[in-house]
Image (cartoon, rainbow, N blue to C red; front, side, top):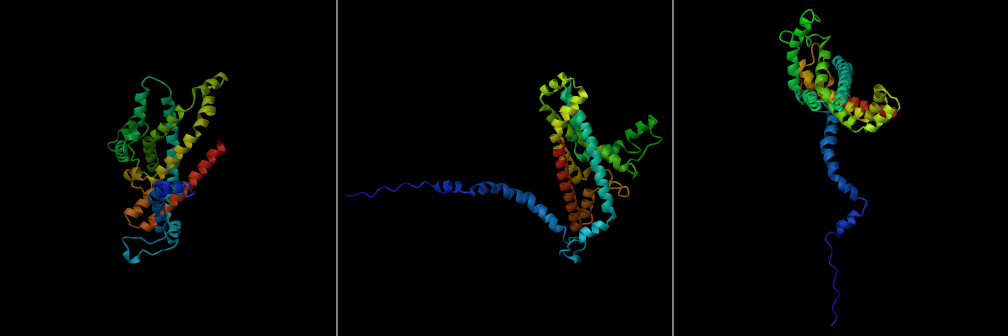
Length: 308
């Protein structure tokens, strides 16, 4: 009697093994990440861009929701408030980032030195960053109040002011007062990142520079700043994005006034969307902000590479 040869047992994982040898295996592994990015980033962004070409005004349902081509963008070019908000946004972001970067770098350099009470100083420096924007804005609104504000009282007593000043009610000072408040609230962000960057610089570089006769200022210019360039670039880009997209502090302090003196693009878009319910026009404003941020990020990264 002849027996049939035993058939080899099939491994249920053989199809998976054959699939892993194929060139499509990498795409299957990337599919969850691609799906997540599409759902969280790509789809909302594309939807916002498409909305900027449509009519979506809840107070005027008779206008419908059809496509209006470039009508919203053409209206932006004729909108005087838009140009004022664009100018204020540039001033607001530039002045705030310069002040925050300067204060943050000074704070990081102070924290990097081992001094008694350094940890307590670090916590105190980070305190403004811990405060929510709503709390910080209301606190400073009270401090700068012309009737009850302690800052006005101190300045009058020192003879720097003849009388108490309504900082947020004067178009000449409202934006700069908001810049000071935002700089106080946001400079710990730079301090934290720059302090982390300073910790990665080897002490041997400073020792070698000192042996070569470099002064403290020369060490700062030739050693510290070049090695912090990438950290500074990343921090500036992140902070600019945050400032352009966050109108909360200005909303609480001035609500864009007086006479649009503190109107910025994000606040203008918020007003158009949630007070006038013109979501198509607000989407066009948001697309302009997106384009400006992308252009700034590209230019700043290119500049950082050229300097390197």
